[in-house]
Image 1 (cartoon, rainbow over the protein chains, first blue to last red):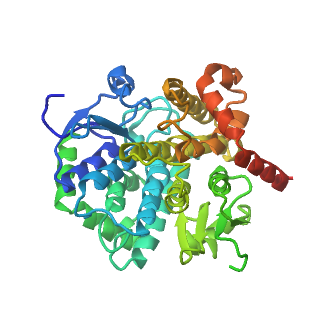
Image 2 (cartoon, rainbow over the protein chains, first blue to last red):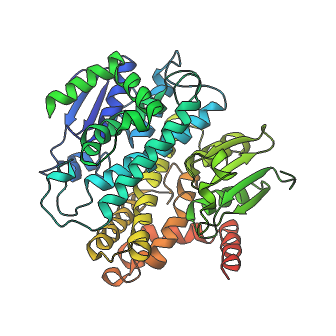
Image 3 (cartoon, one colour):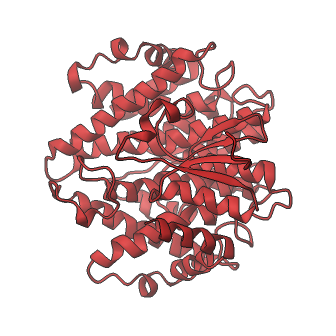
Length: 233
Length: 225
């Protein structure tokens, strides 16, 4: 890789998981070269990428300042970045709260991202479009509703926890990678999925969640990356 | 809690993720009291459980030797247990880079294996309508996950996922893999997991035959009677 940046980040213009790695890289002032894989052409499953990530999904990161160390799974990447490069521990915590941070990252990976992914990709034969409403394929009875309900349930869980948090963040008294990990899928759900759901007003129904969502999205590093994301759509 | 054990583990008789944590507790020789929540009565979403875990899912662990520290998300629990109690580092690695590879596999298990296999079960047994295309989607994905693991394990000199030894990365996959082999993929394209994914199958059998794993399978079987 001759781009001179510290990292190469295989990602996708729309796929949320790559973007929250980008948030962390921006927050930490680390340089990276994004490589946007074309899913229509199946680039994520082609050897040039799968030599690094046999699972063929994004993101995948290569650290050129660490012997071209390769890592995949977005939350694992977040943990790697804070471990090695967050010297002031701005985005993480150090005592037993560390495990609570892991807890939230696993919740995001398995309980949030995964669920929303199911809504977006519930219809089997199309892989690319994020907004399920635009697809012209078989509507699976009950399936879309199942995942919409689950999305709202997850909002409710987060809202309940955040309402009780004095700092308004998930872990400790400050923003951490646990909060950053939820941004892109939250945004996709709030702006893309919720409008199609009748009678749902996120701000009214989940006020603590909504306040947190706005606060984290307004961070300069996050906002910068979100603007870039919007430009690429 | 007056049971005198170090941990309380909120879990479920069938749910694979609770058994995943039990396996590591056994392997580390730690004492724990299992509370099997009744999902028919929705106990997982009610007090007292939901007071500990607002997400209302199992497992949830309480460590009475650490000020009643509460943790949920099974793989976060695995990391907690090895960090605090695996003093000989039998189930983890010490090399910095490799530690992150362990995390990578734990997140792959948590997001790419468990939930998809879980959805297969949902559409096979619990969804109100029969939707063959949904079942097929998740069966295909289960096969794909097996093939990813098979490819990696075939290339691994030790036959383990990380470094040259068994770690929690390997342990985390057992319970859902068992469910997939015995149920999800049983009839799908002729089954034949051992034939199609030999390196994967050898690894799975090796794990499944561990004393602690077999002991807990017997416990689970007796509870299901």
